[in-house]
Length: 247
Image 1: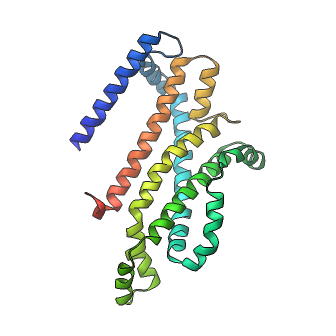
Image 2: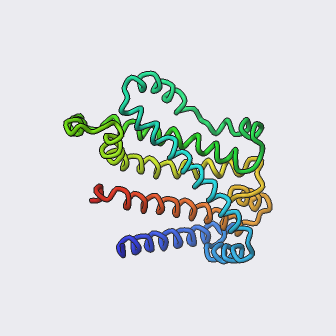
Image 3: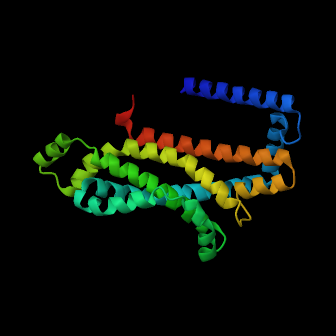
């Protein structure tokens, strides 16, 4: 744990020095020194707007990931262990999976209006397919001898899923969830800059248009912190739920 903290500290120090050096060499208003950005971040946090935008974005990301996880994991595990069903559903999945679903944002906004619902729906839709494919492939790749061993013990279908399919697939599911975080944050930013009045994406765009670069970078830092905290949360959950998978 101490080694991880030391590594993160060194990484932050490197990024800070790189940012400071870049600001010094460019000497342009659009790239302020990190000290002033951090100072502005604390000021905005005390005054309230940045913290409220951060909470709004965090709720949207967490809600989307939770919805996607609860829907995609059971569907993926069932498809992975049911070849007949997978035979008919898999072509539809691989047809829809590569589609750039972000282009449906205007349509979703028209149908559902502004607010949290269209943004959560869009992020959930994108992340859903990533987790679904990972869960399906993980369940399908379970060694046959493990399945035969469970059947020799007269395990029911429920016991098969609970004691074999679920724990065997969980590490790859968490990996897909971790990868999906980057996609979720990126889609969140795009969704919040389109016909929105709150969230970190809106805050960044608004401060950019007002040429308030210190506040803009404070919003970018907030978006980065949101991604890091989400990643750490998923990592902690994986360590707790997949103890047998630790190296």
